[in-house]
Length: 151
Image (tube, rainbow, N blue to C red):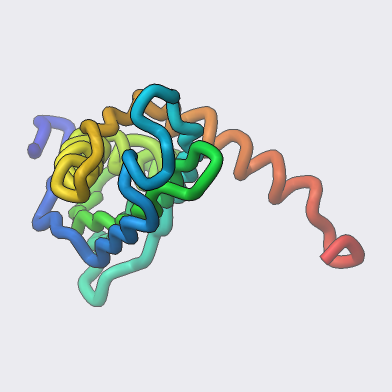
């Protein structure tokens, strides 16, 4: 989308970079048919500059494990979008890359996760929305507390 003020944020492409689903135990093998599994979801945003100016690759890396008494499955997804980001002030670029771009990718990640769980023999796993702004602020805070002597 190009706006009158010269700001441009466009998704050039998006794709599954890596997808792994390990079905460790079926629900019946794990004795989990009548129990709510414990689900652990970890999400990370990776940003890489492209070979062309103002082009960035944003990866939404999602790692999910489910277990009851026994592990049920592990799902790992790296979903990447190639974005054109131009005309924005420098102080907004990181917000766009670490907050807005992942927010645009997240609905696709949610759909892939739900479908992969079903294809693996489990009920659909619908991820709750993530607050990418909060994740970004936590990352900023963590980088401020790290000093060369703490590393």
